[in-house]
Amino acid sequence: MHIEKKELIKKYNIPARPGKDGYYRIYVKDPTKKGGRKQLFGKTLEELESKLYAFEKGVTGSARHTFAEVYELFLEDKLKYVKAEEKRVSRQNTINKNRSDYKRYFAGTEFEQKYIDSISKNDVEGIMFFNLERYTMRDKAMSSLKGILRSTFNFAYEQYWIADNLYTRMNFNKFNGMLEQNVSNDKRVHSEFDLKRILRAIHEHQEEKPCYMPAYALEMQILIGCRRGELAPLRRSDVLPEGIWISREQISVKKFNNVPEHWKIVDHTKTYKDRLFPLTDSLREFLTRLYAVLDRYYPNSPYLFPDSTELGVINNNTVYRLYYRICKQLGIKISREEIKGTHSFRRNAITDVVNATGGNVILASQLFGNSPAVAAKNYYTGVDTGTALTALNKRKFS
Image 1 (cartoon, one colour):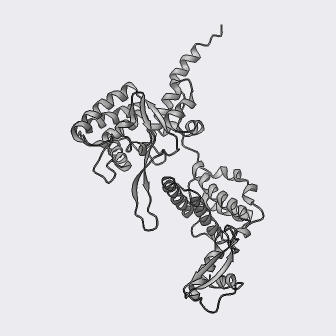
Image 2: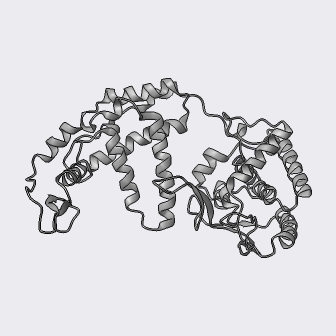
Image 3: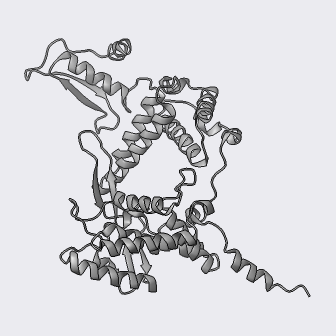
């Protein structure tokens, strides 16, 4: 690094003496600035040289960049163009997840230290093979790995750091034989029998400790198939005559710089799709019971699921922990491979709606806040064979 730093800054005429204000100053080319240049300054020559080096290693600098550096610059650029604070919080969470994925696949490898303009097709195939050999990977993990490569090479190409974007010429299909088969959606949901057992256990919790709000939140998640983060921010004012208005979510803001991890309610859902969930008969009955509890224990709270937290509501983790305890108590296995969890209730709900409406995936996606493609691929667990059999028996062949 020391040799590289000397090479990068030797093209500049470093001032021998500071200005009248005691600072050493120099101008560098910067096409992002109106005049095409900007000033760097430092109290000492060492500080100025460090700033020059950082500039040269940045997006507008002329230094060669390693794969690791390009990906980090891409992530910084990704956040740069998000202005609204709430969107920045969500974007920062996404970036933290991106960094975690990067660490899993690339940290400590020779590949990440290669200069982006020297990486060959064989290098990319090598890092793919290396990860597929050491990890059990399915389509989702493969997409994550490819996504990092795609983003890095695309960004380098946009910045003119590479003359050819070799990612676009890669044949990733050759690795399909190394992937584990995806777990089918029908194995990622609870059976109707287990759902009823879970509901009975929830009702027992409510009877034993009526002021424990996670038990009501878990029941509501089963009834309306919402995301866990969409439960906590719900207010009484969100319950309308025609349905429940879902437009916010509670997110866990991961630790970043000196800011500790914390919960935050944002005015958008995960997919930025506000939606109205109709008041079904079972939901009306549930709300009647819930309001009685709220009036007795939390008469001054505007929320459906209040708690004595900083935000005044339960947090997402308490709902999952209750679900986990109930499953353990009932002997219901929660398999990491099949990834059940509370999110599986969305699959139950989406499948029920799709089958009951003759395959109307668009309606289901509108009710549950997914695109039709995502609802069909990740949530729909299959046809109701009983209904299908009835339809098939109506066919006449004589």
